[in-house]
Length: 403
Image (cartoon, rainbow, N blue to C red; front, side, top):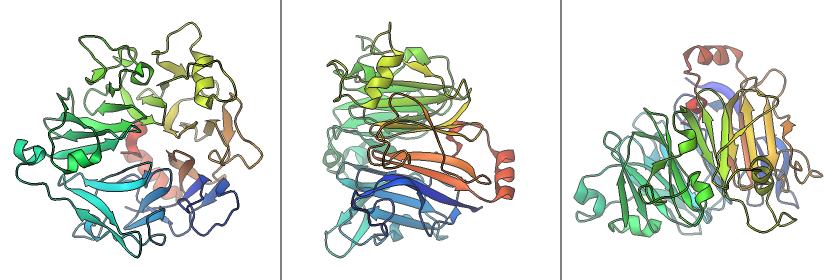
């Protein structure tokens, strides 16, 4: 069922990746602005923001895809025919990309991989990638279930939903060429979510609700754990501080990762720069330093929002963090230098404090939040009947919107 609503966006817009019809000399939307033409949002089928990157965004709403930003074509002109099912609805799956833009789409039902082909002139389209008989996936009989690209360009894939495995490739070309991955591990659970930071990956198990991390050993704080001989950095392993806590959603930015528990608590961990605090430090450095006094850099921290409010959702950008509480309030932390928190042009940072954000009107309900590196998206429902009906069928987990 389609739910009447709208998508609001704020942040970096130099390439029209948020709103292509807005011309601003600073290249940003410093207040939350409605993206026109997205008046029917399908809350049940898939996430609305399919992919939010530095210079490009893909929005999925109802039976339509919208592509915004750098693509070598005009806005919304990428061809999505391959990504629509026989009933004309967008396929369920995940878009993926890196700092250069959108790279492709993984169809969850078939495991097929579609790569964005763009000549940089007049047209662009998603083309199904055909692996060769001797390629790794076909030779081993594995089926793609999820994919993510880290900031260091390493690619992680999850294979076989029923008997999942974790494979890490040095880059996307290595996967597409059918090379054997240098790192392959069994997964301890069906993988519900896969996310990537600058140097690490994190998975969320569907049955055990546990978070496992793996990646570059030089940044153990992004792992949320101290690597050891039985649990090296490259091997997916449970974060000890979260073991025994049922997690409902995970989210990542460049150097920060967050988890929302099924009990609606917010946990964060991440990498802090080594030099003394100063103007060159990120807002996340200030956050982690302020809450880790007396602890170690690998600690996972419980964050208190607005005197202990329950947390429904979290979204992380390059240096900003947005939280949606169970009462429907929106709180932001970090940088607003390009308007990514929607706080106006004069506010450059929240100065080490959580700030209440005002985006939706009084009679509107925020249904979910997403973040790009320099942007924030808010999905707002305006149909009170639809909101009531959805609340009766929802499991109440923070991941209902995102997955």
